View (cartoon, helix red, strand yellow):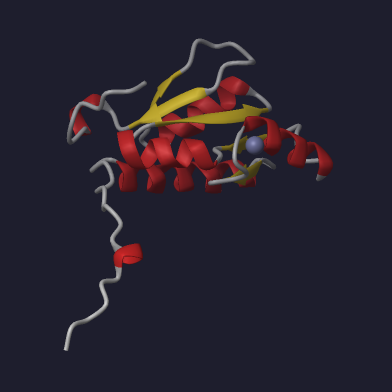
Length: 130
Ligand SMILES: [Zn+2]
């Protein structure tokens, strides 16, 4: 007896970047320390920065916060690195991120997001990044 093909279940599987899981774990470790410091932390939060900031303002949590949104989460899966948006004391957040074992690119500007990844010597692959 012929079976009906289940075409709709045939999704192409893309393996996540090998660094993604570890970067995520280190972000969570940093979040834990930041929460002790009074920061609100969010992962995979809202679809983009505009929606995230407006939701945080609505919750009155936009003064001390570190987060990445859904598009950032997708970037993390794909490239093993991502951006973190933030408000608060930039250099204090930077210290915590590094303490959690993340490599951080940041030019010191209040409107610049942190770009976090694994330190070079721990990277599984060298990611290409848009
Ligand atoms: Zn949005």
